[in-house]
Length: 431
Image (tube, rainbow, N blue to C red; front, side, top):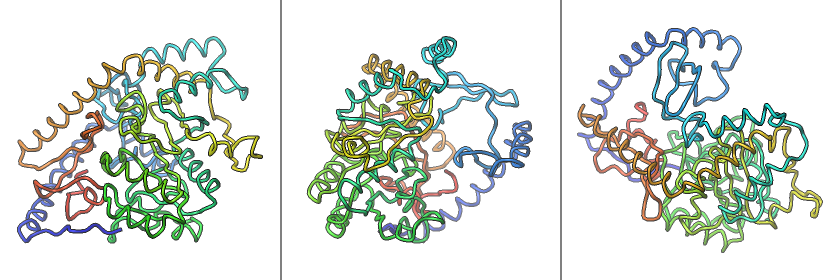
Protein backbone atom coordinates (compact mmCIF):
# COMPACT_ATOMS: atom_id res chain seq x y z
CA UNK A 1 0.00 0.00 0.00
CA UNK A 2 1.39 3.37 -0.98
CA UNK A 3 1.94 6.08 1.63
CA UNK A 4 0.01 9.30 1.34
CA UNK A 5 0.94 12.95 1.70
CA UNK A 6 4.71 12.55 1.31
CA UNK A 7 5.96 15.24 -1.01
CA UNK A 8 9.15 17.25 -0.77
CA UNK A 9 9.49 20.91 -1.64
CA UNK A 10 12.21 21.96 -4.07
CA UNK A 11 14.37 23.01 -1.14
CA UNK A 12 13.84 19.71 0.65
CA UNK A 13 14.62 17.78 -2.55
CA UNK A 14 17.86 19.70 -2.83
CA UNK A 15 18.64 18.90 0.81
CA UNK A 16 18.05 15.21 0.13
CA UNK A 17 20.46 15.40 -2.82
CA UNK A 18 23.06 17.18 -0.67
CA UNK A 19 22.62 14.53 2.01
CA UNK A 20 23.52 11.82 -0.48
CA UNK A 21 26.87 13.48 -1.16
CA UNK A 22 28.16 13.59 2.41
CA UNK A 23 26.39 10.32 3.23
CA UNK A 24 28.18 8.40 0.48
CA UNK A 25 31.53 9.87 1.52
CA UNK A 26 30.87 9.00 5.17
CA UNK A 27 29.81 5.44 4.40
CA UNK A 28 32.83 4.91 2.14
CA UNK A 29 35.16 6.12 4.89
CA UNK A 30 33.48 3.93 7.50
CA UNK A 31 33.71 0.92 5.21
CA UNK A 32 37.44 1.44 4.63
CA UNK A 33 38.16 1.80 8.33
CA UNK A 34 35.99 -1.19 9.19
CA UNK A 35 37.78 -3.45 6.69
CA UNK A 36 41.17 -2.45 8.10
CA UNK A 37 40.06 -3.06 11.67
CA UNK A 38 38.44 -6.48 11.21
CA UNK A 39 40.95 -8.34 9.03
CA UNK A 40 40.45 -11.79 10.57
CA UNK A 41 36.67 -11.45 10.39
CA UNK A 42 36.97 -10.62 6.70
CA UNK A 43 39.05 -13.78 6.20
CA UNK A 44 36.44 -15.77 8.12
CA UNK A 45 33.71 -14.37 5.86
CA UNK A 46 35.64 -15.37 2.75
CA UNK A 47 35.82 -18.93 4.09
CA UNK A 48 32.14 -18.94 5.09
CA UNK A 49 31.08 -17.88 1.59
CA UNK A 50 32.39 -21.21 0.29
CA UNK A 51 29.86 -23.13 2.36
CA UNK A 52 26.99 -20.91 3.56
CA UNK A 53 24.49 -18.81 1.62
CA UNK A 54 25.94 -15.28 1.80
CA UNK A 55 28.23 -16.59 4.53
CA UNK A 56 25.68 -17.22 7.27
CA UNK A 57 22.28 -18.45 8.38
CA UNK A 58 20.36 -15.25 9.14
CA UNK A 59 20.06 -12.31 6.74
CA UNK A 60 20.04 -9.60 9.41
CA UNK A 61 23.40 -10.75 10.76
CA UNK A 62 25.07 -10.50 7.36
CA UNK A 63 25.58 -6.75 7.07
CA UNK A 64 27.98 -5.17 4.56
CA UNK A 65 30.85 -5.32 3.95
CA UNK A 66 30.96 -8.40 6.21
CA UNK A 67 29.97 -9.17 9.81
CA UNK A 68 32.61 -9.28 12.52
CA UNK A 69 32.93 -12.68 14.18
CA UNK A 70 32.11 -13.00 17.87
CA UNK A 71 34.19 -15.38 19.98
CA UNK A 72 32.70 -14.56 23.41
CA UNK A 73 30.08 -12.31 24.96
CA UNK A 74 29.34 -11.16 28.48
CA UNK A 75 26.90 -8.49 29.60
CA UNK A 76 27.02 -5.56 27.21
CA UNK A 77 30.29 -6.55 25.55
CA UNK A 78 31.36 -8.90 22.78
CA UNK A 79 34.92 -9.95 21.99
CA UNK A 80 35.59 -10.58 18.32
CA UNK A 81 38.00 -12.65 16.26
CA UNK A 82 40.39 -9.72 15.88
CA UNK A 83 40.61 -9.22 19.65
CA UNK A 84 38.40 -6.13 19.89
CA UNK A 85 35.97 -5.64 22.76
CA UNK A 86 32.76 -4.15 21.40
CA UNK A 87 29.86 -2.56 23.26
CA UNK A 88 26.95 -4.38 21.67
CA UNK A 89 23.31 -3.28 21.46
CA UNK A 90 21.87 -6.00 19.21
CA UNK A 91 21.77 -8.41 22.17
CA UNK A 92 20.74 -11.61 20.46
CA UNK A 93 17.97 -10.19 18.28
CA UNK A 94 16.64 -8.29 21.36
CA UNK A 95 16.35 -11.54 23.34
CA UNK A 96 19.03 -10.83 25.95
CA UNK A 97 17.26 -8.37 28.22
CA UNK A 98 19.84 -9.04 30.99
CA UNK A 99 22.79 -8.88 28.60
CA UNK A 100 24.85 -11.70 27.15
CA UNK A 101 25.19 -14.91 29.15
CA UNK A 102 23.82 -13.78 32.54
CA UNK A 103 25.37 -15.87 35.31
CA UNK A 104 22.14 -17.05 36.99
CA UNK A 105 21.09 -18.76 33.77
CA UNK A 106 24.44 -20.02 32.46
CA UNK A 107 25.37 -21.49 35.84
CA UNK A 108 22.04 -23.27 36.16
CA UNK A 109 22.36 -24.67 32.64
CA UNK A 110 25.89 -25.90 33.37
CA UNK A 111 24.71 -27.62 36.55
CA UNK A 112 21.77 -29.21 34.74
CA UNK A 113 23.99 -30.55 31.97
CA UNK A 114 26.41 -31.97 34.52
CA UNK A 115 23.49 -33.70 36.23
CA UNK A 116 22.30 -35.33 33.00
CA UNK A 117 19.47 -32.89 32.38
CA UNK A 118 19.75 -30.47 29.47
CA UNK A 119 20.07 -32.12 26.07
CA UNK A 120 16.93 -33.35 24.38
CA UNK A 121 15.45 -36.60 25.65
CA UNK A 122 12.24 -36.67 23.64
CA UNK A 123 10.46 -37.46 26.90
CA UNK A 124 8.03 -35.13 28.68
CA UNK A 125 9.78 -33.20 31.46
CA UNK A 126 8.28 -31.18 34.30
CA UNK A 127 10.07 -27.91 33.54
CA UNK A 128 7.80 -27.18 30.58
CA UNK A 129 4.80 -27.23 32.92
CA UNK A 130 6.60 -24.84 35.27
CA UNK A 131 7.28 -22.40 32.44
CA UNK A 132 3.76 -22.78 31.03
CA UNK A 133 2.16 -22.04 34.42
CA UNK A 134 4.35 -18.98 34.95
CA UNK A 135 3.84 -17.64 31.43
CA UNK A 136 0.05 -17.96 31.54
CA UNK A 137 -0.14 -16.43 35.00
CA UNK A 138 1.50 -13.31 33.58
CA UNK A 139 -0.29 -13.04 30.23
CA UNK A 140 -3.83 -13.94 31.29
CA UNK A 141 -4.12 -16.60 28.59
CA UNK A 142 -5.70 -20.03 29.11
CA UNK A 143 -3.42 -22.46 27.28
CA UNK A 144 0.02 -22.57 25.68
CA UNK A 145 1.96 -24.79 23.34
CA UNK A 146 5.70 -24.34 22.87
CA UNK A 147 7.61 -24.45 19.63
CA UNK A 148 11.11 -23.38 18.60
CA UNK A 149 10.83 -20.20 16.51
CA UNK A 150 8.65 -17.14 16.16
CA UNK A 151 8.03 -17.89 12.48
CA UNK A 152 6.49 -21.23 13.44
CA UNK A 153 4.46 -19.66 16.23
CA UNK A 154 2.84 -17.04 13.99
CA UNK A 155 2.22 -19.64 11.29
CA UNK A 156 0.45 -21.94 13.75
CA UNK A 157 -1.62 -19.01 15.00
CA UNK A 158 -2.80 -18.21 11.49
CA UNK A 159 -3.61 -21.87 10.79
CA UNK A 160 -5.55 -22.15 14.05
CA UNK A 161 -7.48 -18.98 13.24
CA UNK A 162 -8.39 -20.25 9.78
CA UNK A 163 -9.50 -23.59 11.18
CA UNK A 164 -11.50 -22.03 14.03
CA UNK A 165 -13.34 -19.47 11.88
CA UNK A 166 -13.65 -21.50 8.68
CA UNK A 167 -12.22 -18.52 6.79
CA UNK A 168 -8.95 -18.18 4.91
CA UNK A 169 -8.09 -14.48 4.73
CA UNK A 170 -5.34 -13.01 6.92
CA UNK A 171 -5.21 -9.26 7.55
CA UNK A 172 -1.79 -8.00 8.59
CA UNK A 173 0.06 -4.74 9.07
CA UNK A 174 1.86 -3.17 6.12
CA UNK A 175 5.51 -3.48 7.11
CA UNK A 176 4.84 -6.02 9.84
CA UNK A 177 7.25 -8.95 10.00
CA UNK A 178 5.99 -12.25 11.40
CA UNK A 179 8.75 -14.52 10.18
CA UNK A 180 9.39 -16.26 6.90
CA UNK A 181 6.13 -18.17 6.90
CA UNK A 182 3.78 -18.38 3.89
CA UNK A 183 0.73 -16.80 5.55
CA UNK A 184 2.48 -13.51 6.29
CA UNK A 185 4.95 -12.87 3.45
CA UNK A 186 3.07 -9.96 2.00
CA UNK A 187 3.75 -6.31 2.77
CA UNK A 188 7.11 -6.84 4.47
CA UNK A 189 9.23 -4.92 1.94
CA UNK A 190 8.83 -1.32 0.87
CA UNK A 191 8.80 -0.81 -2.91
CA UNK A 192 7.71 1.74 -5.49
CA UNK A 193 4.08 1.16 -4.55
CA UNK A 194 4.81 1.15 -0.83
CA UNK A 195 4.00 -2.00 1.12
CA UNK A 196 1.60 -4.55 -0.27
CA UNK A 197 3.41 -6.77 -2.76
CA UNK A 198 4.15 -10.46 -2.32
CA UNK A 199 7.66 -10.72 -0.95
CA UNK A 200 8.82 -14.18 -1.93
CA UNK A 201 8.67 -16.55 -4.84
CA UNK A 202 7.37 -20.04 -4.28
CA UNK A 203 4.18 -19.08 -2.44
CA UNK A 204 0.77 -20.56 -3.33
CA UNK A 205 -0.97 -18.64 -6.12
CA UNK A 206 -3.87 -17.73 -3.84
CA UNK A 207 -1.60 -16.07 -1.26
CA UNK A 208 -1.95 -12.65 -2.89
CA UNK A 209 -5.73 -12.65 -2.55
CA UNK A 210 -5.80 -14.23 0.90
CA UNK A 211 -3.43 -11.78 2.61
CA UNK A 212 -4.54 -8.16 2.97
CA UNK A 213 -2.43 -5.38 4.46
CA UNK A 214 -3.51 -2.33 6.43
CA UNK A 215 -1.56 0.74 7.49
CA UNK A 216 -0.26 0.81 11.07
CA UNK A 217 -1.77 3.33 13.47
CA UNK A 218 -4.23 4.45 10.78
CA UNK A 219 -7.73 4.07 12.20
CA UNK A 220 -9.46 5.07 8.99
CA UNK A 221 -7.59 2.50 6.92
CA UNK A 222 -8.17 -0.22 9.51
CA UNK A 223 -11.91 0.46 9.51
CA UNK A 224 -11.98 0.56 5.70
CA UNK A 225 -10.19 -2.78 5.43
CA UNK A 226 -12.56 -4.44 7.90
CA UNK A 227 -15.60 -2.92 6.21
CA UNK A 228 -14.48 -4.51 2.95
CA UNK A 229 -12.93 -7.78 4.14
CA UNK A 230 -13.93 -8.26 7.79
CA UNK A 231 -16.56 -10.93 7.20
CA UNK A 232 -14.04 -12.96 5.16
CA UNK A 233 -11.12 -12.53 7.56
CA UNK A 234 -9.90 -15.32 9.80
CA UNK A 235 -7.65 -13.01 11.79
CA UNK A 236 -5.82 -9.75 12.19
CA UNK A 237 -2.12 -10.36 12.82
CA UNK A 238 -0.52 -7.40 14.58
CA UNK A 239 2.48 -6.40 16.67
CA UNK A 240 1.49 -4.04 19.51
CA UNK A 241 5.04 -2.73 19.23
CA UNK A 242 6.21 -2.90 15.63
CA UNK A 243 9.66 -4.46 15.42
CA UNK A 244 11.64 -4.70 12.20
CA UNK A 245 9.87 -1.84 10.48
CA UNK A 246 10.61 0.90 12.95
CA UNK A 247 10.20 0.13 16.67
CA UNK A 248 6.87 1.94 16.70
CA UNK A 249 4.26 1.48 19.42
CA UNK A 250 0.61 1.10 18.55
CA UNK A 251 -1.52 3.93 19.85
CA UNK A 252 -3.92 2.76 22.56
CA UNK A 253 -6.91 3.73 20.43
CA UNK A 254 -5.55 1.76 17.47
CA UNK A 255 -5.10 -1.46 19.43
CA UNK A 256 -8.49 -1.10 21.13
CA UNK A 257 -10.11 -0.53 17.74
CA UNK A 258 -8.38 -3.62 16.36
CA UNK A 259 -9.89 -5.63 19.22
CA UNK A 260 -13.34 -4.15 18.66
CA UNK A 261 -13.33 -4.75 14.90
CA UNK A 262 -12.20 -8.36 15.17
CA UNK A 263 -14.93 -9.07 17.72
CA UNK A 264 -17.56 -7.40 15.57
CA UNK A 265 -16.61 -9.33 12.43
CA UNK A 266 -15.97 -12.72 14.02
CA UNK A 267 -12.24 -12.70 13.27
CA UNK A 268 -9.52 -13.58 15.76
CA UNK A 269 -7.05 -11.01 17.04
CA UNK A 270 -3.50 -12.37 17.05
CA UNK A 271 -0.91 -10.31 18.90
CA UNK A 272 2.65 -11.09 17.88
CA UNK A 273 4.63 -10.34 21.04
CA UNK A 274 7.81 -12.15 20.03
CA UNK A 275 9.73 -8.87 20.47
CA UNK A 276 7.49 -6.95 22.89
CA UNK A 277 6.67 -9.73 25.33
CA UNK A 278 8.37 -9.15 28.71
CA UNK A 279 10.35 -6.26 27.22
CA UNK A 280 8.38 -3.42 28.84
CA UNK A 281 6.92 -5.21 31.85
CA UNK A 282 6.91 -8.75 33.23
CA UNK A 283 4.09 -9.71 30.87
CA UNK A 284 2.93 -8.88 27.37
CA UNK A 285 2.12 -5.38 26.17
CA UNK A 286 -1.53 -6.37 26.11
CA UNK A 287 -1.50 -6.06 29.90
CA UNK A 288 -0.50 -2.39 29.65
CA UNK A 289 -2.95 -1.65 26.84
CA UNK A 290 -5.85 -3.42 28.52
CA UNK A 291 -6.45 -5.62 25.47
CA UNK A 292 -6.62 -9.43 25.43
CA UNK A 293 -5.98 -11.13 22.09
CA UNK A 294 -7.50 -14.46 21.12
CA UNK A 295 -4.05 -15.83 20.34
CA UNK A 296 -0.58 -14.46 21.05
CA UNK A 297 2.99 -15.39 20.30
CA UNK A 298 5.94 -15.03 22.64
CA UNK A 299 9.63 -15.74 22.17
CA UNK A 300 13.06 -14.12 22.48
CA UNK A 301 13.11 -13.04 26.16
CA UNK A 302 10.84 -15.96 27.10
CA UNK A 303 13.64 -18.33 26.08
CA UNK A 304 16.28 -16.77 28.29
CA UNK A 305 18.73 -16.87 25.39
CA UNK A 306 17.70 -20.35 24.23
CA UNK A 307 15.43 -21.21 21.25
CA UNK A 308 11.84 -20.94 22.48
CA UNK A 309 8.59 -19.61 21.07
CA UNK A 310 5.11 -20.01 22.46
CA UNK A 311 1.55 -19.82 21.20
CA UNK A 312 -0.78 -18.73 23.98
CA UNK A 313 -4.48 -18.00 23.91
CA UNK A 314 -8.03 -19.19 24.31
CA UNK A 315 -8.52 -22.80 25.33
CA UNK A 316 -11.26 -23.37 22.75
CA UNK A 317 -9.02 -22.25 19.89
CA UNK A 318 -5.90 -24.14 20.97
CA UNK A 319 -8.08 -27.21 21.62
CA UNK A 320 -8.09 -27.74 17.85
CA UNK A 321 -4.56 -29.10 18.26
CA UNK A 322 -5.61 -31.54 20.99
CA UNK A 323 -7.04 -35.04 21.32
CA UNK A 324 -10.56 -33.92 22.24
CA UNK A 325 -11.11 -32.45 18.77
CA UNK A 326 -9.28 -35.20 16.92
CA UNK A 327 -6.26 -32.94 16.39
CA UNK A 328 -7.96 -31.06 13.59
CA UNK A 329 -4.95 -28.73 13.40
CA UNK A 330 -1.61 -30.53 13.23
CA UNK A 331 0.25 -28.28 15.63
CA UNK A 332 2.34 -31.32 16.51
CA UNK A 333 5.60 -29.74 17.59
CA UNK A 334 9.08 -30.66 16.41
CA UNK A 335 12.05 -32.61 17.65
CA UNK A 336 13.29 -29.70 19.75
CA UNK A 337 9.95 -28.34 20.97
CA UNK A 338 10.06 -27.77 24.76
CA UNK A 339 13.78 -28.55 24.79
CA UNK A 340 14.81 -29.15 28.43
CA UNK A 341 17.57 -26.51 28.43
CA UNK A 342 15.26 -23.98 26.78
CA UNK A 343 12.49 -24.60 29.29
CA UNK A 344 14.90 -24.20 32.20
CA UNK A 345 16.44 -21.00 30.81
CA UNK A 346 12.99 -19.55 30.11
CA UNK A 347 11.70 -20.42 33.57
CA UNK A 348 14.70 -18.82 35.28
CA UNK A 349 14.48 -15.70 33.11
CA UNK A 350 10.78 -15.10 33.76
CA UNK A 351 11.16 -15.76 37.47
CA UNK A 352 13.93 -13.16 37.62
CA UNK A 353 11.92 -10.58 35.68
CA UNK A 354 8.80 -11.09 37.78
CA UNK A 355 10.77 -10.90 41.01
CA UNK A 356 12.58 -7.71 39.97
CA UNK A 357 9.90 -6.08 37.82
CA UNK A 358 9.69 -2.90 39.89
CA UNK A 359 13.38 -2.10 39.38
CA UNK A 360 14.44 -3.64 36.06
CA UNK A 361 11.90 -2.00 33.77
CA UNK A 362 12.21 1.58 35.06
CA UNK A 363 15.99 1.25 34.78
CA UNK A 364 15.70 0.01 31.20
CA UNK A 365 13.32 2.83 30.29
CA UNK A 366 15.62 5.48 31.75
CA UNK A 367 18.70 4.01 30.08
CA UNK A 368 16.88 3.79 26.75
CA UNK A 369 15.84 7.43 26.89
CA UNK A 370 19.36 8.56 27.78
CA UNK A 371 20.72 6.61 24.84
CA UNK A 372 18.12 7.96 22.41
CA UNK A 373 18.84 11.53 23.49
CA UNK A 374 22.58 10.92 23.26
CA UNK A 375 22.38 9.47 19.75
CA UNK A 376 20.28 12.36 18.50
CA UNK A 377 22.67 14.88 20.07
CA UNK A 378 25.79 13.31 18.55
CA UNK A 379 24.28 13.53 15.07
CA UNK A 380 22.96 17.04 15.71
CA UNK A 381 26.43 18.17 16.78
CA UNK A 382 27.61 17.10 13.32
CA UNK A 383 24.74 18.81 11.53
CA UNK A 384 22.76 15.64 10.85
CA UNK A 385 19.06 15.32 11.68
CA UNK A 386 18.44 11.97 13.41
CA UNK A 387 15.39 10.73 15.25
CA UNK A 388 15.18 7.65 17.47
CA UNK A 389 12.02 5.60 17.76
CA UNK A 390 11.19 3.27 20.63
CA UNK A 391 9.71 5.83 22.99
CA UNK A 392 6.54 5.04 24.89
CA UNK A 393 3.10 6.61 24.96
CA UNK A 394 0.39 7.27 27.53
CA UNK A 395 0.11 3.59 28.52
CA UNK A 396 3.51 2.28 27.48
CA UNK A 397 6.53 3.26 29.57
CA UNK A 398 9.67 4.02 27.62
CA UNK A 399 11.87 1.07 26.82
CA UNK A 400 15.33 0.07 25.71
CA UNK A 401 14.51 -0.75 22.08
CA UNK A 402 15.90 1.87 19.70
CA UNK A 403 16.00 2.44 15.96
CA UNK A 404 17.66 5.47 14.39
CA UNK A 405 16.05 7.22 11.43
CA UNK A 406 17.22 10.13 9.30
CA UNK A 407 14.20 12.21 8.23
CA UNK A 408 14.63 15.13 5.87
CA UNK A 409 12.34 17.37 7.91
CA UNK A 410 12.26 18.31 11.57
CA UNK A 411 8.50 17.74 11.70
CA UNK A 412 8.51 14.41 9.84
CA UNK A 413 6.11 11.88 11.34
CA UNK A 414 7.53 8.44 12.13
CA UNK A 415 4.50 6.56 13.44
CA UNK A 416 4.05 4.02 10.64
CA UNK A 417 6.44 1.82 8.63
CA UNK A 418 5.79 3.58 5.32
CA UNK A 419 7.02 6.83 6.88
CA UNK A 420 10.35 5.42 8.07
CA UNK A 421 11.00 3.40 4.90
CA UNK A 422 9.90 5.90 2.26
CA UNK A 423 13.04 7.48 0.71
CA UNK A 424 11.06 10.68 0.23
CA UNK A 425 10.65 10.99 3.98
CA UNK A 426 13.89 9.51 5.38
CA UNK A 427 17.40 8.78 4.18
CA UNK A 428 16.96 5.01 4.31
CA UNK A 429 20.53 4.29 3.14
CA UNK A 430 21.80 5.57 6.50
CA UNK A 431 19.83 3.00 8.50
